[in-house]
Every structure is written in structure tokens, then in C-alpha cells.
Length: 185
Image (cartoon, rainbow, N blue to C red; front, side, top):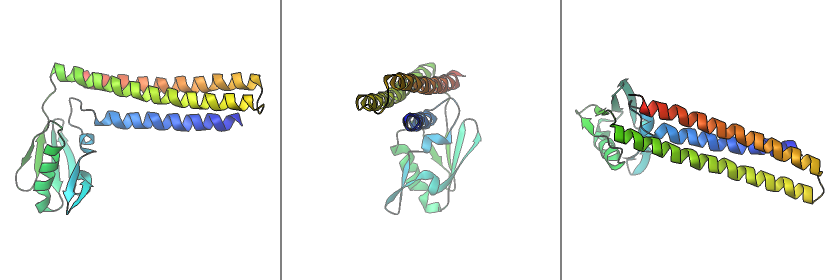
């Protein structure tokens, strides 16, 4: 019975860590990253469509992104979508290809991005701790209903704490990696 709760905690905490990693990929670093465009939607014949479904995105140089639309008439809508997304990037349209030059980050912007990463990390840790609390409450409920003994309860609470500590450690590791990536000049 306790194993089900452990598995549930691991799964849900793992999803929180995975979501945090996805959020981190959207935070800009000194190098051009295609993940910046993950949330950008282009008006494709009246329906909002992810940019990677209407064009080929490439990263030929560390500070350059190219976008090659599959249909030439999509150049304008793609350009408009990028400007509307407030990414701080300016697209240059040459009639066949959109080039986006990614300027190097200033020291001030780097520090802002590091703060943003730390806020995201704290939100992820809070999510993990909330899951821990839910599972602990469930275990206490089982003990109250006399379905498990007090010893099992304490063993279960210790195991859930170990799982929580492991997931928080993963979040810290991801945070440190992203922070060094941002501050690397």
C-alpha cells in the first residue's frame, strides 16, 4: 500500500521537475536558442499555429537564428508573430528567409535572467513540497483509519522526505547549470 504512494509521489514530483526544465529552456542565454520560439503562435489561415509547424527554424551560428517558411506568403505573419511575442528580438526579412540576430546580453540583463531562473526554481520546489504534503496527509489518513501502523507511517514519511530531497536536489542542479550558462560570457 505504501509503495503506491511512493510511486505516486515520484511520478508527480518528476512531472514538476520536468515542467521546470521546460520553463528553463525558454529563458534566454547568451547563445541563440530555438526554444525561445516555443510559445510563439503564427496566424496560419485564421488559426494560431506553433511557428515550428509553418517554418523550418535553424541555428547556423551561435548568435543567429534563421526561419525558412514553407510557404513564401507566411513571411509577414511569422515576422508579426515574433514582434508580437515581445522576445526582444527583431526579425530581418530578405524576401525568402527571416534572419534574427541575437545580441549578446548585458551584465544587467544576465542578472535579471538569473533572478527569473531562481523564481522558477522556487515555484518548482514549492510544487514538490505541496506534493509531499498531500502524500504525507494521505499516509496520516491511512494510519488514522488503522490501515497502517505508526511504524509504517514514520517509515513512509521518511521515504517521502527522501524522495522530496532528491527532487529538490535535481531542481538545484538544473538551476546551477542554467545560471552558469547565463553568466558564461
